[in-house]
Length: 536
Image (cartoon, rainbow, N blue to C red):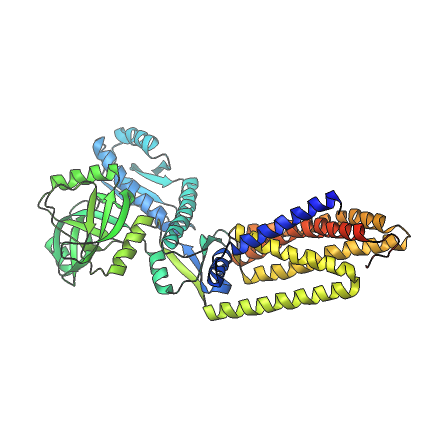
């Protein structure tokens, strides 16, 4: 055998062995072989079963929260700088879509409006201060359009990241979480292998906004009782929040501004309280611990409400200063609910609520049925193509079949190496790869036949056949890969799976149809007797 041919053959053998090891590993028994195949070849939602959800993020929630925080901060800053005012209240224009967010400041003396303008310019760069027509003592803070757009986009991205962290913590393998639609703030979430959809949905949609607030008064048995106790006018900077006391509905009057919030958390873990009941322990960052220590140290003997998603979970008494950690107990926790709460707190609060627009569940049996039919279709298509090549091209058909088998081997090995997810459209991509692979061989073989009919020697005909067909093969492959790239950029999970499978198959096909087939031809020609015809 020629040295050049031997070197190329060894290279091909190394590629084959590497692909086989990439798929199977080094199993010691049949069971380990099966485990390796399952761990390396990931199945998509339509093959493994699971959930497909379309969510819409209510981004206006995030904008409203930002506006409420700006209103509270404006009040504090105006008091600090002794700028008089009669009232500060939200004054959103809900007639426009999306709404225009505004804050109305009433009763500012004319000689202090300049101070208000300086305050807004220095500390509220996302807002414009404008006059109110016909009222010289009032001003409107209007949230800039660009700032509102940024807040909405950030809410979408933060929601996507938070949902991803929660899903990852649940142990879902190969989830797909991506934007969906055009400009409607929608997300598509695909969760293969999920066996408890209701629990996953509950964990995903929980806002999990944790706030620790001082209790001013309460608990009361009803909302009416709480309001009546204060002559139906709550104290300034307070709010009325519902909760439970000994399993009964109760109401608390709390400070409107929280001592610390979920944004100050650095961690949360399920634990047990002093009586052995499930609870959740949390830790705070440096800034949160400093504020929490200052508030609890100054209010020993008072009650501190632990508020989750605007509902009081429990309101324990403050026995002493608390700094970097605390415990959420009560709330009738079960071990699973305590673990779920710790999970959502640790992953961060959703910046906005979410609505489920659609939900599809694929059962494992349907996925297994899809796999069976897909595999059968692939095998039947492969055998039909290989049989045709053997009949039509005779000895050269064996060359094409070897290249085709190696093409599929490289495709599966690459999918395993990159952690690609095999979907039902991905199986279609495999079948299409079989057709594209044999198409390349047909171009080469027909070109060789044409050169032989022109009277060229066998070696020259093979060389010209590969050289001339190569340009056409490159053109067809480049255009198809470009189409696959567009599908990957704009498609959802299954379509992306098809694009990835097709692209890998095309790249592998260039190697097998051009390089591997040529080496086989060269080997056959080196062993051929002089003057013998080529079986093609």
